[in-house]
Length: 476
Ligand code: ARG
Image 1: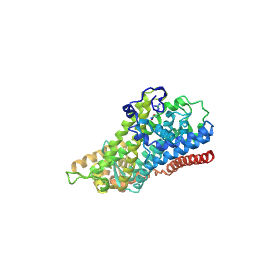
Image 2: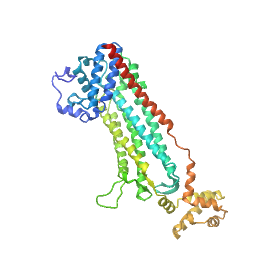
Image 3: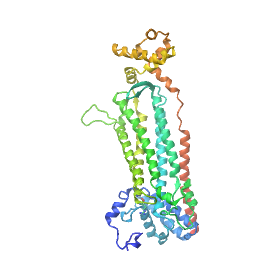
Image 4: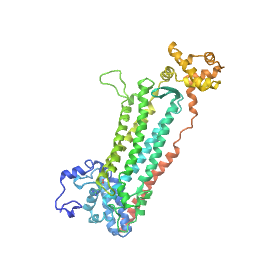
């Protein structure tokens, strides 16, 4: 017989190469699930005792062994062995080496529902961390909202119209608000309990899924066991998609800042730039370039996660184990990118002189000039043509649009152009101010919502520990 926990029907043992190949990147991914596996096992064992599926004394022994394993883990002495396949077998083997009652802890569950629950708990914490990162980055962007300094808006990477730094910052803020909404929506599906689904078909043991849900803080029960098994990887892909869209937003912000710094319109703090080993004058925006590149990693991870689902029939397949890798990588790339960008935003300096020069160079006020002529009575199409002709003349004579006077505009259009309105229209620092009329952004409700979700998981953890203490006191 093989010495694996599932070895009964085998005569030979698995090859070491097989176990190395099937383990989650040499156990490093499963190691991150240890606290969740222990929490899930605590809830499962408490439920088994409450349902009289195992004796209270047995449950107490298992719970105390689980606490010893947890202590070893916290002390850094719990060693995960590849030969035991995964975190579940490692924890169970450690428990059973402390108490023979450990042999009963896997009653009425499968590693398939167990890992599914562990990963959901991991993703719940990951989502809370990501939300924290998004909210802090929003706060950093908000700190720029007092800056009424002009800012260049582009279309086709050609100067379009003048806006303000605040206007730009709020645009990015609002995009991140949508990321937070998507994350919140994904959270509700992540926060559904698959434990109790068994391998694929549920169990005839009289389990109580409401109780494990309460102990683990799940917001709902995912009912159909086959759906539970088959959806492994789906919520992971959803979280990766949220990370992908977030990283694409971060990439865009990075690209904006790289472009502006290349033109001298923005300058990163020395703390967030690097130099060249050869060219003494260089100051490079390395972290922004890495954020831009790492958004590409997310694209790859999303394709990976969706491809895993594409190949699988209903039920559990080990393909789904790979979704763990994609999801953890997505988190590991997105979370630090949020905080890196936050630090950069808090320290970047914009150069209003260079920005104004760029706005003048690109005749950024030509639209406002056309609107002013149209407001004086010309049809917009005609006003557009007059303003376009002014730009053409300015290019020829080397003049700025702000140097065209109201009386020149009056004679070009044959209309009476108000000098004050004209001066305001053609000066880029004045035109940009009206863009601040947009509604202020506010993430205070989202902060409350996420704090509430976090408090719920903490309460559930506390409840599990209280129930463990109660049972262990009465069970001995
Ligand atoms: N390590 C596995 C995973 O992550 C646990 C479930 C294994 N189940 C199985 N039938 N081999 O999916």
